[in-house]
Structure formats: structure tokens, C-alpha cells
Amino acid sequence: AEGWLSVVGAGCEMDDSPLAKRSVLRVTLSSLETPEARRFVARYLKSLYVPRTAFTDDTPDRIVKCAQGNMAALTRLCELVDVARQAESDVVVDGDSLDRLSAEILCR
Image 1 (cartoon, rainbow, N blue to C red):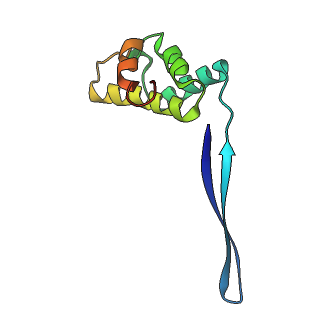
Image 2: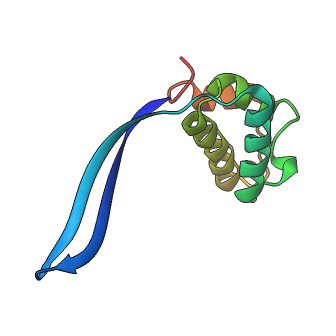
């Protein structure tokens, strides 16, 4: 994944004017491998307090497949599962419903 990162660094004051430097960096992040992506999905869903009963066994694998190792996509798909659960507490997100939820956002 590629993107831009803006960094502002501030130093000590000299002669009554603050020392500051702003840099814009172009960064390229490598995609996660499938095992790493699976671990990330499991941990992130847990950090969102999504109960294991809120999704089927194939949902994490569908998230990993759809996101293709992209961290931002993995995060957004996990958050979709959380939003679906919050909207209806008794919902169980399966792979097909995840595909429908994410079709317009990530998986084209």
C-alpha cells in the first residue's frame, strides 16, 4: 500500500522563535502475508469486542481474501463486522453478508 505521511517535529525555542520542521514522506508498506493477516483480523476483532458468536468460521478468511494483505482494508472490513453487530445485536455475519457489505467499499 502506498500513501503519504506528514510529520511535524518541534524543537526547543531559540531566540524567541520555535524551531520546527515539517516533512512529507512517501511511504510504501508491504502487504501482510496470509498468516499475519489472519492473526491481525483475530486480534482486531477481539479489540473491538466483537464476540466470536457474531460471525461464522469463514468470515475471517473472507476478510483476509478480500483485503489482499492491505492493512487499511483489513481494518475497515473488521469494522464493518463490528458495525453490523452493533446495528443488530443478534446478527451473525457470514462470508456472503460480508461480501455484500464490502462490495461498494473494497472488493470490486
